[in-house]
Length: 258
Image (cartoon, rainbow, N blue to C red; front, side, top):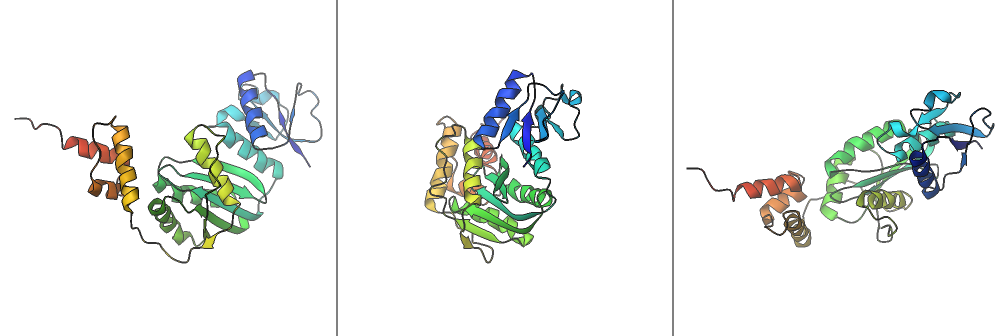
């Protein structure tokens, strides 16, 4: 099978590429020269400055994208040369900042962390187009019940099978930053089977979820105040973001001008 080649004199980019490839357990070959490219190299990752130096039709400028993972995703897709996958699993780690991962035919193809649950549906629609398959299943973690149900309800119309997975053991302890943890958990969720969702689910925030949102608002305001239960409910139901809720509540405390 062909493999990925890494060629760049940009030490920082080279280090980042190797770090990602090793973490995702993707085979690669470090190239010290591009004069004679080994036949087993299927695609080359390099820098934007060195892109035109590589005499190959299958070459990707890794620093031309938002992050290294995206460049590696494209390299894998180019390497596999797949127009259609047998099976695609889309894993979603629910929460205020959802993580999403795509596993196609046992290969981790893509992972991302989002800023809001409301962005999940559009991202999933895009991924369905980017990774067509004979069979696609969406799998979502069982936590963050209200946000999880909001996400599921936004995906029902896609008519793609949805499963709720027990994500108890999927949290990554190795990743120190939240986006990496969320996307890593999503990758684990994608590989686990769960109970099938048959219809839209109810949005009934628990007292614990409401308290959690209120506590987060207190932390975000450095302990100055926490939002009301009513406003916390609006956040949990997706009507406003937590940041918007804090600004709304803060405005109520501003003194009126005479």
